[in-house]
Amino acid sequence: MTADELLALAALPNFPDSAIDLIKIAGLKGAAGVITAFPGVSFPVPAVVGGGNAQGAKNWDRLVKAAGEAVAARIVRHWRGTEMYVPSCRSAQWSQAQDAIRARFDHLTQERGYSGNEAVFELALEYGVTDRAIQLVLKRPGNTPPAPTAPEQLRMF
Image (cartoon, rainbow, N blue to C red):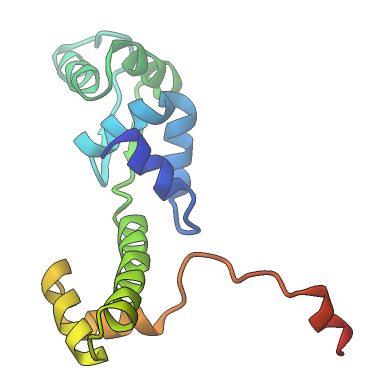
């Protein structure tokens, strides 16, 4: 995951709070590296920069490899000797993919002349999910908030 991809996910309503915390400490690029390296696990942070014992040194090296030495040091100073939960962000990624599926469905049916069933079939193949999953996605609202109601419409009531 790149920093730009993580930033795009951060705008979604189901973006994990733990990812926000990680971004605050590690920065966008560092958080992206950590999330890519350790998605969905509780990472045992060394008690001291560089690691105080063999396991701490091993985990220090893993952090440095994932995010760089400066970011690893910030993480150690913040989570010192505890476990840092690293979110996978898969739920937010799927939510983002659902928006893309809805947009692609509209493109296929409105601009390319596909029937609804044909578009569902193509999208299932394209995204590697079942046609039922595509149908469910199409029934759900997207992540973009609805447009504000025009003041003229409010005066009618």
